[in-house]
Length: 120
Image 1 (cartoon, rainbow, N blue to C red):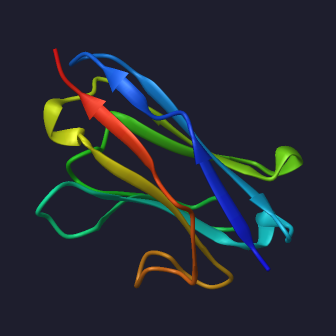
Image 2: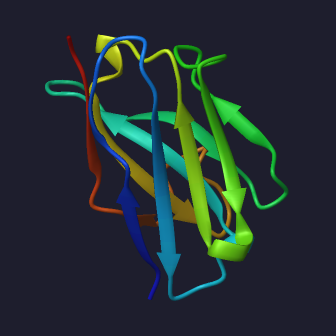
């Protein structure tokens, strides 16, 4: 059973940075595609960034140049570095993983989410 646990969310001022982590247990994370999705109140869940087992990355247009997704296979983790945060980045951020893809469709496994709030 794959278990995903997110951490690193919180309250930050506009222009600030946060670093989200997704830790996996129950599997070798390196073989999975992993993505970060987010859902703001009243909005649909959307893909923010994804990374394949081959370390190919994909970003939503709204976060390109500000967010960076990376893998730390030694720690069985995927990181989302978020810089230049904006109020519209406020949402619950979810880690998502799948042996095949998290880009074409959401993957099989989800974490419980971590709240990111960008506000002055």
